[in-house]
Image 1 (cartoon, rainbow, N blue to C red):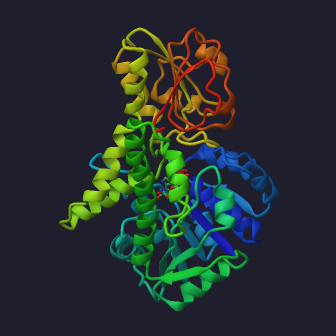
Image 2 (image 1 turned 30 degrees about the vertical axis):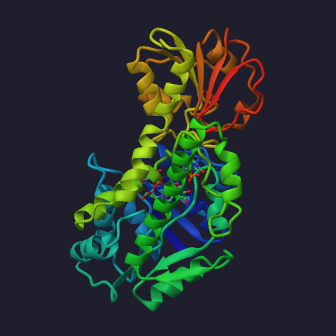
Length: 422
Ligand code: NAD
Ligand code: UGA
């Protein structure tokens, strides 16, 4: 099948290469010319396991362009995968969605299926995207074109794997033709297909991210109590997670959740509820726990290094999680800001994310090795569980004080060690 993908970011590009690998012909559209050029040269613009190999392997079946008309004229289906960031009040910013929808609407000639894959609050496909497409195209949904909602559940770092082996595929449609077509596109992926209407599909996506975030903040709150009484919360959660009604996943306590989705999606759901006259008590608490969690690492540091002003403090791990160079909403950002506010001299290291962090904090030091980062530092804070951090030699520090925010340090000989929740 011939498919256009609008927005060639994490979701769009991964969707594109995976569909191409299944034999579909893909045209990606992005407003970013540099990204488009890289994709056409077979270079992955983001760091994602197996993405480069898949791009090269499917060079014949996947191209990219900045021109919507090239893509729309050569396809019957369009997946909308542009970003849906937060506004400053936490509510969802639909400006990219609206811009892309207008472009698509102008180009609908014969019957076309528009599939919303971006995460959008319930009702967006029905009340905003569909009327806008009808207005701009002058055509009627259900007759001249159809609109579906197909949320994405992939994780960064494991994006290709998650796309190819999902726990379920959620398809939100309003007519049989779109439903059959979407099932045909996904033929070859062996997982249950859950069919609902677009608004329910949108709610499923938010509920899933909100529940996963809640599990993390819950583990962190329990972890904070455990820390006070000398219990390792990982021992607690291991046993708790053995209950099949709970599951062991997303109970790893530590510095909290970052990334481009959990913080913004929980904030958007809180704002959505508030617009409907509901106070979201539980989700407010989830965010509060998450906001304070990284700062607790500084409290632990100050137990051992009471005055951090003008002292060198090493921060290891800048990516919001391992196996990605993505730093969006990384817990290291509020932590570094607090260190700087307290007058510390920050030295930071990440195997691949330092370049991105330089755009946020241009004036801190970014040595090229762990040893250099630790050299003469008075404290070391670990924010990302990169495998290489599990066996660090802390000897470059004169008196190593190590605060572990990710339960990654195994050997604790010759160092003063504090786990965040253990
Ligand atoms: P991203 O920022 O990586 O990519 C979005 C892309 O859209 C960018 O390349 C940008 O240049 C492009 N773009 C912006 N406006 C455009 C326009 N008018 N026309 C064409 N291209 C345009 O975003 P992402 O992480 O891929 O997220 C996309 C959506 O998917 C969001 O709603 C997000 O919540 C959701 N989502 C993301 C993930 C994830 O792991 N990143 C997982 C599931 C769902
Ligand atoms: C998350 C979801 O897992 C995906 O299903 C979803 O599609 C995606 O958001 C999205 O909607 O964008 P992602 O943000 O890539 O994926 O990463 P996760 O592996 O979920 O981790 C998110 C954050 O939670 C990381 O900062 C991680 O360190 C933290 N985390 C995760 C914990 O602190 N504890 C845990 O037990 C698990």
